[in-house]
Image (tube, rainbow, N blue to C red; front, side):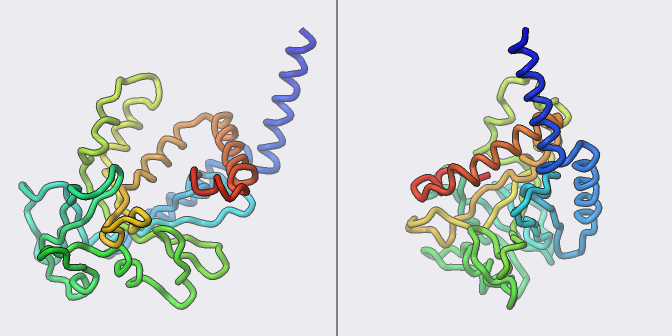
Amino acid sequence: MASDDTTRNLSLSLYHYLCQNIVGYEDHVKTIRMMNNVRDNLVTDQKVCITSGSFGEGIEMKGSDIDVMHILKEIKVYETMSSVVKIYDKTYLSMYMEETKPGFTSLLLEYTNAVDVLPMCTDDRGNLFLSNLKFKQRFERPRMNVDHGPCLSDQDGLYDYCFCLHSESWVTPAKQWILRPNNSWPCPEVKQNIIDHGVLFVPIGIKGSANEEIEWRLSFSVGEKLLIYAFSHTQLLCYALLKILLKDAINVDTQCEALLCS
């Protein structure tokens, strides 16, 4: 009995420490998420912005940068073009996965009237593919020019901007997630919201691949954020502890730092 009381008291102490010093209490997390949602809803004709990463999840952790995904609205990605009705001022790309590993695809140019799209493409055996390298270079700015994976970072390391593309439909490589047996988590509404959002494509290929420049990684960061939103506050604190473990224990080992991402 004494042991149970000790465990309970230690758990409560850890809970309050995390709330007061690391993550914040539930109302604080809700406020951050609300602020993010307000900012993300300020869309333009050219792009949609989505706050992602820890801050996008509502976790304001010391040392974390602010990750923002910029989804270009004038470029559309489809798995197949068979039933697509084209609009003259949009650019259309299709997924080409014959020579890519799971989780990646090349993006074949199907149609464009935009003068700035062709310079971002690379010819491969008579086909034009969107180059992830040229795509990122298009958005470089004097103080936003540090290459950080699929992102561009500022020189102070405070912001990560990821310019990316969107498929409004779910894609076959991720179909298994839809077909998995239903259980209590996530609830059907959350699962459907994730499916309805579709899939993002971020500009990075497999390092060392022969086709690295024309490969794009499938990203489910919005779905991941919606799953985190479905956590209870206690689960969110455990998640934050795992992030700290990754950053301060695992990634300090040079042999392990590239094995996992947060």
